[in-house]
Length: 313
Image (cartoon, rainbow, N blue to C red; front, side):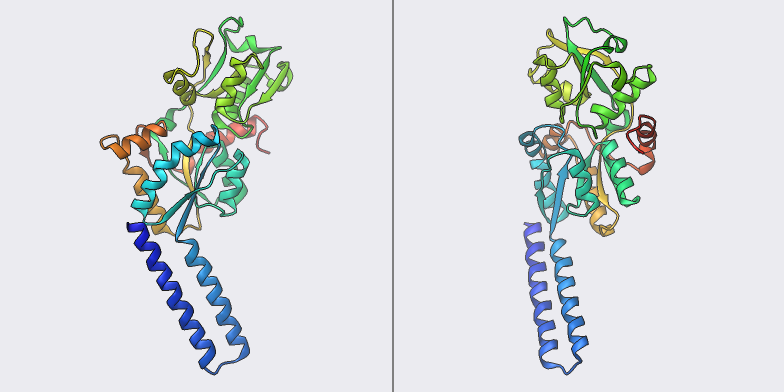
């Protein structure tokens, strides 16, 4: 109800502002240039205020589009009520599209992986602000999986094998697994028979299950979800290596977002808790126990890893 009243109030204000400018232009004696300036001001103000009536949200497509919509649907409804704006979920086709959407201000709020946040920060000239992350994202890990009868027991066994990552821009599905492989003296581009990119974590699991690749790396929370929902048979496919921890996902906004709006969104995310049905549903769908504040410094390690792995130049 609050978001509806907010939207209606802005609409009435825009109508009044429009009528006022038209009255000025029609009935007050002024130069042609001043009239042109007032027309420009009217259009600019209308566009600016209209944009503020909708909060456009997107996420990196770490899973299938239908799953992304299911996961973030309850959150968009919650944000509408708590932030007081209409919220539209705008799915994108791939990870780079999520980066470009926020950099170019086609959306206002994005769920980034740590690496896509770094990419957006670089692309925008440091104009992206991370506002919240899951508590789990302070100690995140990736897993490597294979068929249990493959004979693969350790990272060095991957030499000469076909291995899949997720999206090339994925933190947990590419950047950090590649980084840890390089630390172990394994260069995927030289030591693997073939490197594949599935595009999403669920597709990564499917590639191993169906035997299209010998092994793969992905987000540990997606793997655990598939196991808990009995979507994968761990007697046939299972984890053989878990990486050390690192910082990962966050919610980010553009620095040009008005501070009061940014603060409202941040507060709404931080106020979610498992002690009420709405909060529990949203957090569970997002594989979280709670959201906590975050800061740009948390992702310096990921940027360094990206540069060391040759993924950032």
